[in-house]
Image (cartoon, rainbow, N blue to C red; front, side, top):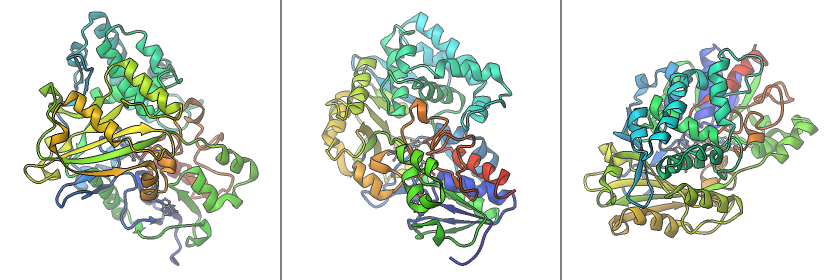
Length: 477
Ligand SMILES: Cc1cc2nc3c(=O)[nH]c(=O)nc-3n(C[C@H](O)[C@H](O)[C@H](O)COP(=O)(O)OP(=O)(O)OC[C@H]3O[C@@H](n4cnc5c(N)ncnc54)[C@H](O)[C@@H]3O)c2cc1C
């Protein structure tokens, strides 16, 4: 590691790649170091079970990637990224024969509610937010926009609803269908429905469903990071894989180091250079609940009781609002509910390149407490079977990732937390520490660019983009 560079980036997840690209395109020399033999972090595709069957190891569904202004600007289609959009973005069966359906059209979605008043409320929420989605992503999905808000009305409209807990939004709906749809999207926060600001992720996912869809890349998520890597190389950046960095002093000479890792790892890599107060904040940083991941191969499509569910890319399995609330409450209390909320994707229904003929790929996970060492496999399978009788009989291969195995796979997943830290209100705009610029550290040459910075988890590259801009205003000016 002798070649000096203006900037070095540690970690080739979507945020590390995004940071490196922004810096390279700004004319800085950039070297990126990735611990594992392949790039991608939480955005990789692999043959986990049978030859020719492509599983998304971590991320699968990408409304945030498609919304990302950086990814759009890079025009990743030039580097082979092709989005597939299923006919229905999301299906959510309630268990009593009713199914909530998130479609691209607001009207069509509202039509799946069985209550005219709720349909009106939903339209009133969605119509202005969908029109403003680009502005919201540009100005709110990043550091707190203090003093720099260019579109206060649009952002205020989103903020007023987003600051509420899902429970408060759900109280405005009467229909079990609308309430369940809201709960399933809110549960992506990994927090109980009563937690402040859980309205934010719920609305962001619903709005993005209408604005850009919930697509996935043909061939798997790996194609997103492969396209990012091509973009970085095109801009002159250099990637080294199989290069784990234990301490920033191992890095070649540089003016700025951007770390695509979480606070615990930042402390390990550079703790003695960061000052006592900042280091103390990083030590207090809170990690959130974990994922328990299940990848399956079936010998045919999932036999959904209601065939319309087969037209959806993503399925939320958890029944009613009350059931999902109970599932997430249990996780917050350190337990796993007997009927956990399950997120499921069925990509090979729409992308034949994922599996040979006669095989179907299923991606699923549920939430469990951080570091949980139990086995949720049977609970996940039981939940799917509830809505698809005969499902178990179609399973021909399976692959399980428990929280400890997720962390072994990607050291950023501390205790199995896939979002780089809890996404609760106190760690939303101020992650990883309370500072004017959340990406900078007390060491002027060290920046954090991972999902542990605003706007947090997900494949969007915005943490990396904002961190790179922070470095360009500072050490790399
Ligand atoms: C089961 C699961 C499902 C998910 N589903 C979705 C989804 O559907 N949609 C979505 O948008 N997001 C999803 N996510 C979340 C998403 O994967 C992450 O939020 C995202 O990858 C974070 O990107 P990042 O660049 O911050 O970190 P990461 O992707 O975690 O990348 C960090 C990289 O840094 C490397 N690294 C760490 N330490 C070192 C070191 N010391 N030296 C060198 N390299 C190092 C790691 O190996 C890794 O490659 C999911 C995650 C999981 C696990």
